[in-house]
Length: 482
Ligand code: 4AD
Ligand code: MG
Image (cartoon, rainbow, N blue to C red; front, top):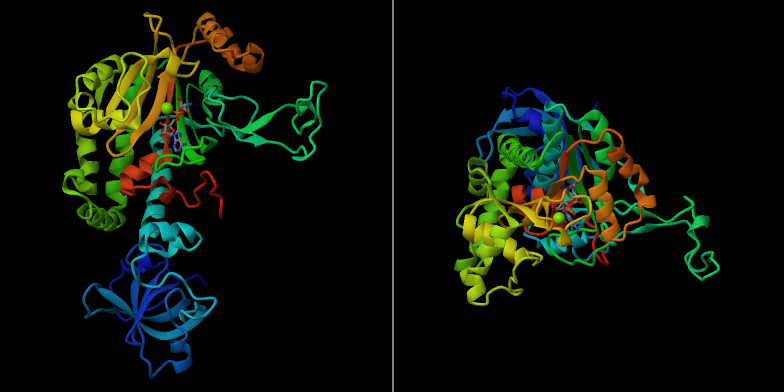
């Protein structure tokens, strides 16, 4: 029989009824109180041991990290900090965890504060900490809410491929997938690697985005979304970049950029609302953690709002919507530019905004999320719809406090000729994307979509400061340990 989740037991009225739980020991105090957690919630439950009833040898083996199955009676607790507790009748030690610091197999997660850096090195065990338990329960809730949001609105989830022969973003930062011998690949006459001999008969990569495939589906199913892992081989060792991250990419036929902005704003707010409603215990814990971190910062770097207030604030306010051109003007006239506080000064139209600029707009100027639209075509992908000015495209980026870019999207170029011209300008051969161009040949229609970086959303909701701490096993340059 499976143990009852502790979360469920905590909803019972304590009447001395028997129950069975299974979980891992957080602490064992005074040879009497075991704090047991099974991951079903943050709090866990207190198990009270009567050492006269249980073998001394067994009790000696119970230490932090050990796995127990406990049968006992559920009683009201007279102690502080919990309403109920389990009076143990029988304890089964499923797996012990060495508590002797001298031992080679010492369990590294002793009950004390560990740095996130240290926990990243033992990512295989960090699920067992309160912080990561909270983060990954919220990650699950956000995944579920994401599917629910789209399902409620009549979207279909499309599983776009992970292996691909196309480079959707044209950014040239893809991981190659090959079965050719690394040391002696077959060569063509000119000495280049002969990928026609490779598994797929051509060069293949891990996808950077499911967008192009989502577009194909949207031009038949009208409203679709993808939610999958994407891969980028950028050498960005930052707190905002992963080499493997999860992205949600809706794509909607008949939608223009305004519809797209409305959908994205509703999408983000729905998720935050869901988190407040369904993850209250974990969020309260992360809020305390956030407050402690803020206190440790210099006064001028501290956030005015705590984690929960920040989420509530974003929910309440409409996102600011401005064009790239307006943003450049604001930045150029800002005191930061004048006092040379930007590492990269803003230099008019065409400047590729850095995260310091994005954060200035969000945190200093508007003090709420900002949607920037109509970027110069040169700094955006080939598929974005050209504006009448011939120099800007119908792009939108959603910028968030503390994070920078959370969403990148656009109205797509639905006109065959415009698309062909843009591809030619950017040196993208039509033969590579003939299937994509076919949608513009056969029954084309204006459509729009965006990509929402799931881990960036989680950074905002959990208040964690490093993206490596909101994905179970982060991949980054020189990092693929687990
Ligand atoms: O702006 P990006 O590159 O847009 C696309 O990939 C489009 N195909 C999306 C679309 O229109 N369907 O990426 C979208 C989002 C970014 O805004 C960011 O939140 C996240 O994906 N992102 C990353 N997250 C973590 N690590 C990285 N290396 C990321 N690169 C992008
Ligand atoms: Mg982007």
